[in-house]
Length: 284
Image (cartoon, rainbow, N blue to C red; front, side, top):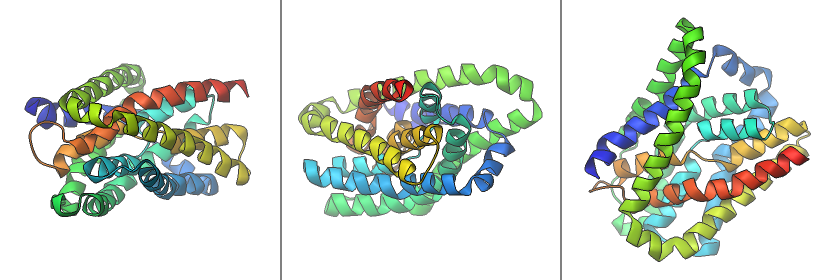
């Protein structure tokens, strides 16, 4: 388990972020300025709305301690490659999805360490570890910004190769995502069994409410149907792999700590919500 924690988790996330970078071009970032209003609403929903909803869900379901902090950690994570795939399946605005994922992923280098420091201290109290915001930010640069940058360089220098290798990287990233979730669940099996009756419904509720809130806010803002679907997906789907990877960096010890358990369980419950939701979106 130490090998999975120290090598497997960061490597898995690096591959996932590399697959994101290979699919990015400078046009994806220019699109942010060209569609500032749509992007701004989506960004605010991801950075502010999701943590607020997560906090409310924690209170409603009575989650406490490290599990509650883990739910907040999950809410701080950006969408990741999965949200881009789900947006495509929902016939959403994939270009908007990619742009949101890219920029929010880079922004998370600043937001996640700061917000995690607060959440851990707030929910874990005297048991809270000392969170070094600087060290966590540097770690996020290595496991998120660096792979994304390498992927973009590959795309810029060898676009043909990047387009050919992108599907393989996405499949590999998906496989690693599953393995990371299984490892996190296995290392916290006893804790999972003690909390699953409350944790799973809480995460499903968060997922459903977030997607519906994203859809409603986008509709109120006057977005097109494709844009509404994309905002809904981007708001409703978080990068659970990032949460699982960061957990051992925040709470040191053997294996994957309980802080990463909500992200692992979410990796399973997310599909229980996302797949029916996507089918519903495609029919409308």
